[in-house]
Image (cartoon, rainbow, N blue to C red; front, top):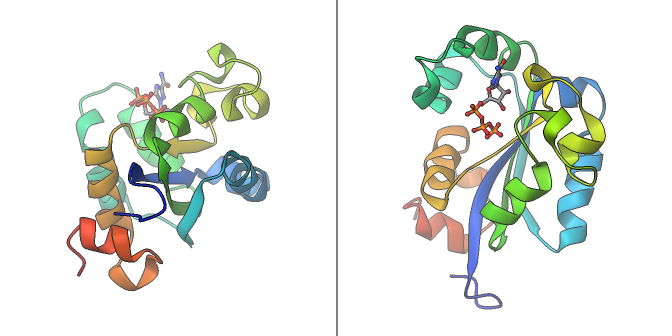
Length: 155
Ligand code: RTP
């Protein structure tokens, strides 16, 4: 574990294709940096449908699933791993509600989006899903955190 912060945990965050196309990668990174979190991996990925089916496996029976896969595969996303104290729950709070119009002002979605089908970013919902998602989107050599690499069994 991170020696400076024994409660440090990882999360997987992604700027979705609409966020990338709208030039919001820097804005979203900046908000997490200002909170005090550490960016330990980041890359553009144009996700395949296979990757998205894995990532969103739990939602496969939802009526919006086909549209979600089309949306998420419509262009590159900016995939990231962040670390820090309670980053999963603080990250979800910072991103806001699934529906941007119900998301408070001050949240990323509340400030920067309108449409539930174009809600600009993604954040893991638990440490367990974060670990699964990080292993799905990244390889060992892309993650600049010894602590995390050990935690998810990379080393
Ligand atoms: P998130 O983590 O992205 O906030 O999403 P969530 O788990 O709160 O919401 P979930 O229901 O799991 O939805 C995942 C993503 O699917 C898209 N979505 N579209 N009614 C719709 O058209 C609809 N509902 C959900 C959104 O992109 C959402 O983030």
